[in-house]
Image (cartoon, rainbow, N blue to C red; front, top):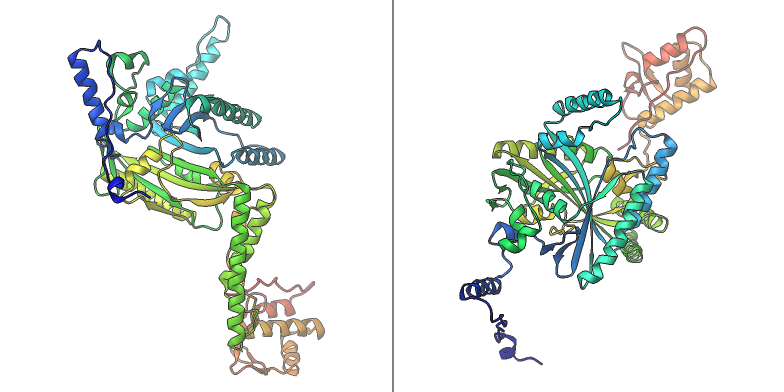
Length: 540
């Protein structure tokens, strides 16, 4: 057993052995770096230290922590809305298989970026080069059409989509083949869906993060791997902004750009397939990030079964209380009945082809000043409320939220929502569920038994008189209604009172199809007399 003296004893620091051919200035420089590393307490004091990765390799592998390695793939849109019904079904099934490919050992992140791009560089991308044939006029005309569409576009914003996946490994040698295997499977799945993809190498990933950090200026990305050894700089020096500032805990400034990090609180029982589309249609630079972690299937089923057991135990306790109080034991709180039914439905889905995922949904809004930022945040909050969700600000977690938006698949926000495969597809790609209704599309509100009120009894008796006596006039109808036990007062408005009623009720107050005007129109019309269809009455 360790004593307190040994527990708090300062560990001896070892000085590294330096080569003998170094000059005094080089030794002092190395010693300064070592001293700074020893004073590092985990709190970032520079913009470079805030960026949460250790090393970027030229092949695109990024070492985020000592045991965590990631890669990034860019993918294009999938043409779902214009597809035929059978094609939509196939696309949905393929996306289910695509998401179910990720097991609990693979962390992945989906990034949807709306960022202003350099018009000159983007114009070069869409320009169609000429060839030595007779179709250059067609190419020039088509290029001019694309340039016109670019000029009329969404404020110069371009939408790009990325998927970043990561695994844990003890070394780079162990991580590389596993990442290559995941990459091959992902690209094959995308290819089967008809989606074009491209792997980002190390320089492309650095440029992507540089564009995120410099959305508010026109700073261009200049970098070459050969510059690192001679300059003594790291890759973070080429992508970091001039400064990070997090005043007040609700906003941040990144260079000259103002920003705010928020998370989506998914409280709706039904997820709309337009939620993500509405966010991305905003005419401002923003980044939508979804961190997704698959839950082990056995563990997910075990957790749901445990929840069902606890709900049944609570149900039994409520039934015991009802019996002791003299009530019917079938009367239990509506929440218990609803949660129990939903939990059993979720268990059935997990036992079929569904998987459970833990999702963190982050949104980064930006603005050139504080007022523009607040306007963009307000617009995003309105979109969330329209879909019965809430957009909550990450108070005092702006730095963690900002770094979690980087395409590193490294989530520093511990706010998660459990979703199934079908729910996740609806949220990611705006796909409508075609196969059996998923958990997100089912009715979650308590359904109380319908109670019949006095007006319902009158409507039922009216139907019995019309079907049994077949009166030919409204007065004859009232006579038959009196014979059935009703007291009727004729006047400006006809009122009736049944045997169990204490007060008279006007016929005009009954629901559509049973009012005095509807009954007169039915009884006094010529030809085929067909009563107006009655609308079902809503019960609370």
